[in-house]
Length: 315
Image (tube, rainbow, N blue to C red; front, side, top):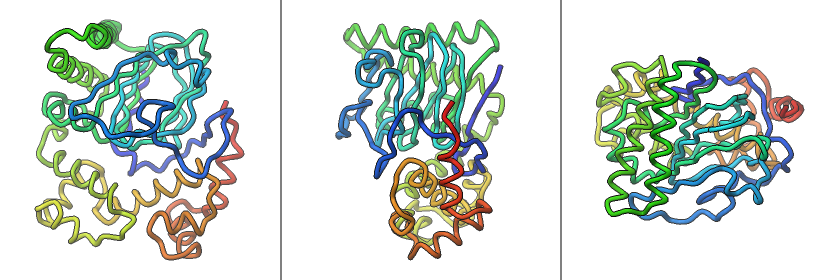
């Protein structure tokens, strides 16, 4: 079995270059409700289930870079093969394969529409709140599991995903309760594939780290100091530092820098915006300072990084 798990995307020093095949580079990465539909507020506890090829006429197997602002997704590939993209990682797969992508994470894929399909379970962040305590899978970083492995484990996961799809289609009384329970089971089955899970994933540190990540996502552009995050979370500097190290393997300041670096890479890879615009977007004062910040962490300038990544074919 090949397990490609991103315990903390912010902590990755990604080396795999990718672009999404066949698409143009936009001014910004689009955010959708479901793919192709404008982002919109979600009802509390919202879930949605459909196959990838239900929207074949819209994407023809080439789903460009996008994210969902308030919704995570499980994608279970039932047939075929293709390439899945999570941020700047390229992941080739054969079915069966499964991914969990939290809200806000840029993703997409390239597949042959006549041979490949998947079931996509979309779960509002509000619906994940109670599920979080019922699963062993950390829900704040993307994970993808693909290729071989325990056949019985894949059967259990496939059965669970198909039960979710059947329950969603049926609309029977109590559907929301049943879907929540089944999603927790599916996420736990995904977690069982992931050999790097540790007992720490179920501790209070994970909850604090999750809240910190969400707060950083909202405010990193505003250059909040560490003590403002501490105050906003109602915690202490020591507890926040301990939770951040346990969950992400980083100090608080390094995590903030990595979040800014991640956003910089998104904008460099998926948009045509100039460095001045990107610097402003990620909370840095000018393009020169942004270039120094980026080069100190990646070893090359942002312009070089963009050119190098966009020159690599998507496969």
